[in-house]
Image (cartoon, rainbow, N blue to C red; front, top):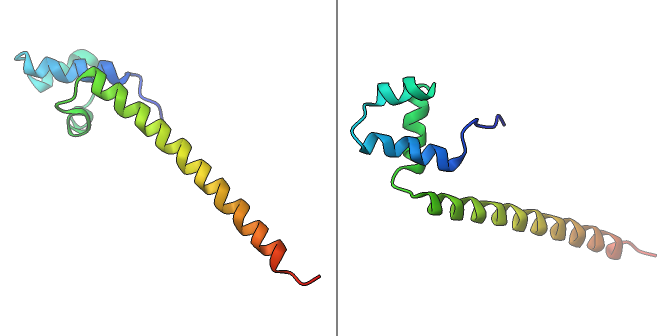
Length: 88
């Protein structure tokens, strides 16, 4: 997945520029982004503050870590069951 050249806090600040009265076309031209990118960001980050975005990112990271942990445990459990189910 391609990484954005903008951080989440920068994205929130760009979105807040629209609330200041600037037009979407002006904002996109100034920051070098497409209109579709602006609207995708607005759908994802609209109405959030910088602290909310940081908390969301931390929760996503923790969720990914927990999913990996559960997957590893399931793999270990199935391998143990396979070994124990064989006749000696």
